[in-house]
Image 1 (cartoon, one colour):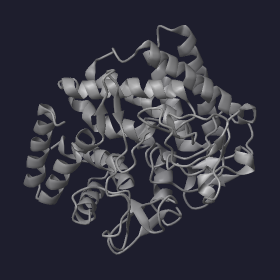
Image 2 (cartoon, rainbow, N blue to C red):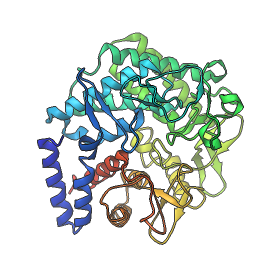
Image 3 (cartoon, one colour):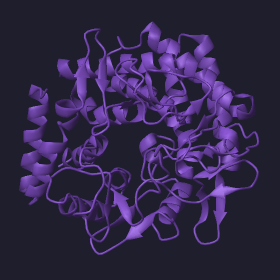
Length: 421
């Protein structure tokens, strides 16, 4: 499925890349920009759309949203793109109403799953039931940004409203995780794939923030208040206030939650670092314990301006950026071929194309962006596609050759640079 406007965008950006002396990037953009439409999108007879992640046949609420975001600029003109995005938003609403604690879903209730896990709810539609705040944020963000770029409102259906109400319920419940029924246990696996304390996660105190079992990497949180995901929640609750401005119940509930979570971030989510000054922590438990790091997956600390929480010139963000792009971040790597942020989800000294794209999307430095363009040219292992993680010393060693999110966010970065030229 390659539409007229998709083809037009490819040709326009390719021409700019070639003129800039970057033919390898032109080839990559031609492959990556349409990748979601051509390989991971299924249009369903009921008007919905199922967008799976690539080499795994399930649809992640997070990934599917990110996989189509780079098409939003042409949605106003392109009816087929509107069909995909509106269909995806409808499918995501169905999934949230089915199970707001699941992160990934099958196309039908087949019972297929990543692993036979122990949870409080058996669900044949869910591929995996790792509860992640961002899984509930991404569909709201997609619906809002689609509205703002296309002018369309037909996707704000009764089902979408019901899904948003369910999101508000879950966020409020998980402000007091001790009262939640949710637990997750996976046996015979690394510690990052299950939750400790009989599947409940490590203890937390009340902060106003909302609890998350897992990070956007699908790895378990060490401490339950995941700061970048709570920031994303604040932004998306603001989106809900605007979408449902005429619905007092939803808008007031969203506004109250937004205020409480934001106050929690400001009180508990900032750490005074001896070298970098005040920085945002990655996680906390509200009892004085912090995880100081960043992960390649979005939402991340690096992505804070992209999420819309604060601008790139925010002082605490600038301090945080210096920290996470330094060797003080345990998942920042420098090697013979590249440097950047990786993840505990992939091998040591592997950095991610997603984090390199996000570094570019949040950079105010032209030289930094040019350096990142150089890296994208030299780290595809000759495939022209983006990968999950690759070895900083040898990009021919990489994980996931078919990972549509990485291709989409690379395309978004390229558009951000060359649409301006």
